[in-house]
Length: 310
Image 1 (cartoon, rainbow, N blue to C red):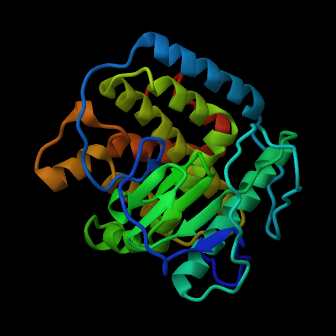
Image 2: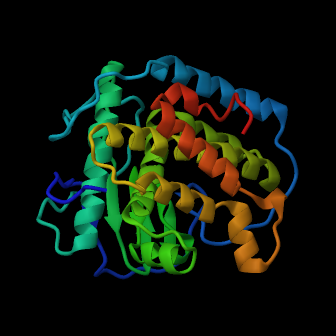
């Protein structure tokens, strides 16, 4: 990815020198690096309810935006105009020059997501609210509770922040065989995809519904949420390619990362067998398929994982 020399977001909070402790809580939407347990089927009624929410979102976003920003700063009007009333805390961005190349890279990728999603929202008469991205080391406290780097990168709707321990990128490369800067960019774009879901009301509805679900039902609904975030990452990649920022092999890097962190592939690597009933992010094939779909068309209406087979 041709990222050097481009704008860096000032919405990055560097907390790598701070300590923390504890464990993750429900409400985090993360890239998985471990297995989970569960089983069963999703109820038709729950799927229909969330499908209605999805249809509302697609009614807003069904237009393929033709005017995407080609670069420059993103517009963030102060005050109102948000799609939903999310009252997350607004921790200040650093605003200072990055102190290391990884921070520079993450800040640049975040800036590119800001430009793209601001353009998409504006093309549909809406205002995009930038998320914060928190860099941490080891453990961190979020509005969703405590989390450790073992949980992988995650998005917390409660404070509208993406949390990332950049050592995950080393693990992605060395342990899972997903190397390359665009594999890393895909991880960031996936979590930002959850932020888009939060702004459009999909995550709040899902969090409300899963309080009444069993583990198996929640897992299966979670797969649809996660695959949609993969598709949104693909939409971002589509417009990033239109800017001429992708190099040969970049999309293959992202698709390989999606393959390596599929539930089936990870479970086979980590425990030697798969438990399909426990999947909560999607299989390798599903993740690749939805990422590729978003990249191919750039249309949010093609990311409807709630009313289409997955």
